[in-house]
Length: 180
Length: 243
Image (cartoon, rainbow over all chains, first blue to last red; front, side):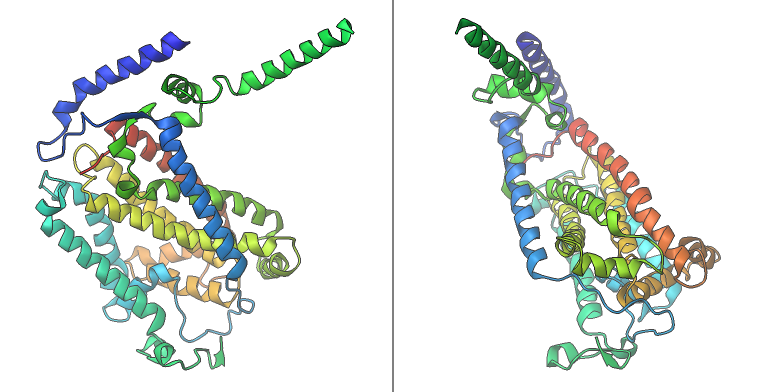
């Protein structure tokens, strides 16, 4: 068993050494001299700590913070405003500003296709942030727009989905005329 | 006396054999033992046996991919508990939610965990994508895996969205009404897509059942398959390593 394991590791290292130079672009830091460690327990331990921390966080939040449960669904009473889940509020925000065909269909399709094509559109071989200013600025811009739209949709859209400072000014939010 | 001694020895030997059949290599005190354990353990074998320290630096990966996967597991387990009590019909669903919240032991906490873990997963998956983008890790030879990741992000959103309807309260039904109304705007196929998705013209019993089936079987299976491919490709294409 011991010999077999050793042989397999050695064989893998040889394959890796043969493969490495061809695949790494010249602009990427050469990591072939970096220290090798066993993934168990070094790597597994880090993952374990992250998992435990996340579990503790989730349990704490779940004990203190109640998930929302409003009145039973009533198809006859539409709350105003009606809002999509927060991660779709950016889309709903766009729908309130642009023609539906554009905001509801063309826009999201375009973004998804563009995202999948990113590795083929970005012709810059470098991975260093200092050499990828355009890509990083575009991504930051995209993120800022998405976050802004979600925040606007969540907090600044009231009755009839029109602009509302109510949340900021502390007015009670209403759902269809009655408090939520 | 010797008979008892012999029986005890035999018992310890059997116990030793039992433990040894599960934990074959003992504590990973040396790299050699650790490597052997990783090589022969099914669950550990998702990792390469050896990695470079620069690949697993927490300040580089922030463990976001791992946390996303872990949240998927948390959601599977808590979701399983919720399924014991929840019946996806308009006459039962809401009452089952009330029971979970007020009657079932730990029902409320489990439901809260499922809800908050779902929100957290949307965030960690998104941040994972941001990290991969900002470090340029999608570049050759990892173009394909970036595409798989994009689909996984989409499935995460769809999983969260289908789950949103299930409590069958005023928040659910109208959020899903608004959400599925967006599908209506697609040229020609739009209204049909919406009809197919919610099984009618309004969000009712059919929509609840369809969303439930997608939420607990269809989408998790798709996510699982794509995750297997995603992790496999990380191994095959190599870790992106430091900058």
